[in-house]
Image (cartoon, rainbow, N blue to C red; front, side, top):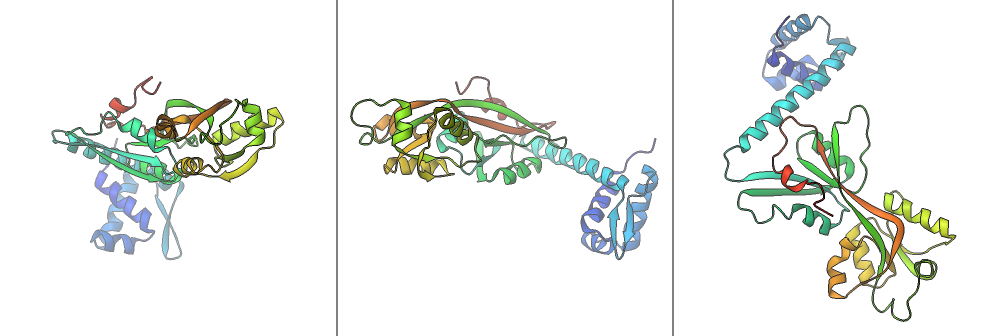
Length: 294
C-alpha cells in the first residue's frame, strides 16, 4: 500500500482552496510545473483524479471532495497536537472560551470561577453568535463554547454537548411593583406588563406554552435578546422580567429586585459545547464536572 505523502496533501489542499494551479503555485512559491507534477503524484498514489478542468479553473472531482474532507481532518488533528503539546511545560496554560453574546454574565463567571486568579492559567474569553462560535470551535479557535441554545446536530457535526445546568425561570420585578397583597402567578401574568426573551429561544417557547395553557394573553412591555438588557429593564421597572434568578442574583441579594413567582415548566438550559478532539485541553476537566452547577 502506498504511503500518503503529507506534503503532497498540503499542496493539494492549497490548489483546492485557490481553484487554479497558477494562483496556488504563486502562493506556495513553486513553479506551476512542479506543483502540477506533485499533484499528479498524489493522484497516482490514491488511484483517482482529484481535479477536473472547467474553463480556466480546476474543480474537485467526487474523489477530490472526499480527499479534501480527509485532508482537513488530518491537518486539524496536526494543529490540535501542536497547540496541545506547546502548552506542556509552560508556566501558564490557556483555556479559550467562546460565549454566546446574549448569555448571562453571571453564568459565565460561575463557569470560569475555578480558574480565575490562578497564576498558572490564562483565560481567553470571546463572545459572538452561535454560528460564529461553532465555526471557531471547528477551527480550534476555542476549546469550549458556552450557550443556552441547542446546537444543530447532523452527520458532519463532531460536537459534544455537556448540559451544565437547568435553571428555573421566574417572574422578577422591583419591590415597588410587587408591593401589596400577594398575587398568584396567573394574576401576575395577566395583569402586569412583561419583559420577555425573543420567540426563537427555548425559554420563550416554554413560556408561550404556559400562557396558552392558562388562557392568558400577556401584556408585552419589551422583547429583549440580551440578558443584560433584560436585567436592566427590570431594574428600571419597565415590567416583570421572565428570567432565571441566576441572571439577577446580585440584584436579588441586594433587594433591588424580588422574585414574585416561579414559572411552571419554564427552565433555561446552559450547556458547554466541545469538539471531539484527540488532545482536549486538560483545563476542561476542571470546569466541566457533573453536578458542579447544582
